[in-house]
Image 1: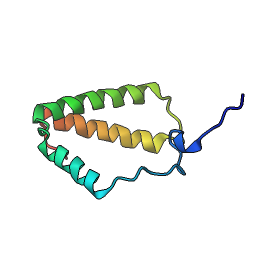
Image 2: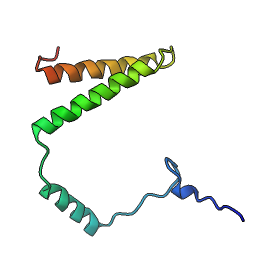
Image 3: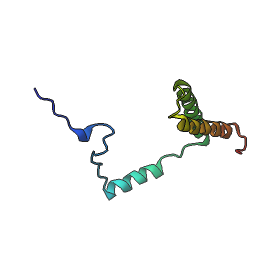
Image 4: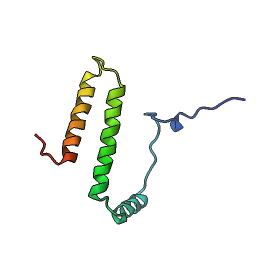
Amino acid sequence: MAVFRRPELEKDNPIAPQMYVGPRRRRALLREASLSPASRQGDMAETLQVLTAAAERFVASVPPSKKLQEERSALLEAIIQAQQLLSGKPLP
């Protein structure tokens, strides 16, 4: 039995065709988004706290390397800014 691979269905395939969304469907999606309740400020702060905690765990789990130091520094700076924003302190 032969297994047929369909590269267009594989995840993260840059040559996979994009799904077409017509104008009716696009308007319907925009209408749904406009009718949905906007996220409250508390939800945003909670989401930012969860995201910051996950980023901290990720940075702690990845061993420091010279190749990734720039990306690691950028992530650490973003974590610091998020924590300052959550604490209510003004950003420098």
